[in-house]
Length: 346
Image (tube, rainbow, N blue to C red; front, side):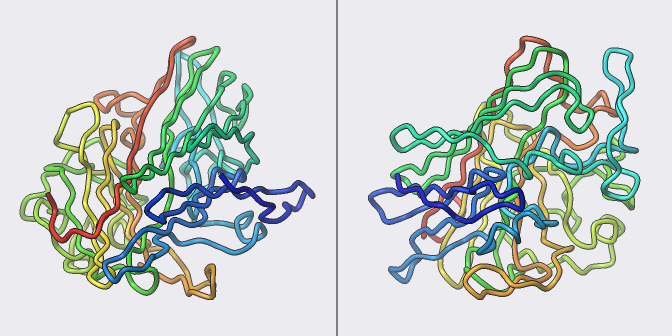
């Protein structure tokens, strides 16, 4: 495993990049800052390689990173309504960083810290202690995020956490996938293995109601392009300015197939598997024009995020799967992004 200084944070601390490789020529570059997936190059159908994630060339850009490109998200991914929750009868008030709501762990979430790196063979683990009271979350939380690039061209992300007090945890990765390597992602074909999705209010906060995907723009039961229905006159699409919704995965197996995304330009297909019950489909609606790595442009809907998760706002909606981690309990989830150049969805 190769590692090198990627740059320096505003504090003067060095940010290190780690390059994972396999015998097929695929490689992933992961930063210790925010556990960010800075690059992910996989074989394409033309016999070359395509970097399939949006990213930046400098630490400064990642420190600004308002879109969370490639970052680990925690303690709680997605939104918490009204920036507050109650646990064991005690109320906790969180930072309002998405209108009145709390988003992606707060002002300085897991994406804004330098983590401790540990190399072991082809696996790369990052650990840190999120202290009691960080972003006003309770409990000391020991977190370990492990990345592995397999010989089957899979990026395997494993999340583990332990706490000394009851707390809430919902960890994910916010990589923006463009399987063409550049340009719009609206021509990507997508299949999502879900028959329901969570209804959002106008602030993209789940209301608690589950809606059927059939007969709606959210029906990805058969592959279709991301852009085919994205601009239809639909209340839920208006609420998200496109897709920014949690899909309820139909398969209840331990490690289940969540989605398949493919590019007509490169022939690359990405299949997402997860142990979690939901996946957030985000079509990059709020990306603004900016320079990305290697001189590539980033703009609205230039990528698709498939963020595996417990359903958003679950603390206020007890019929949703719970993000509560009990004292001395153990949090463990796995998400796999598998890449090949097959055409189809099986």
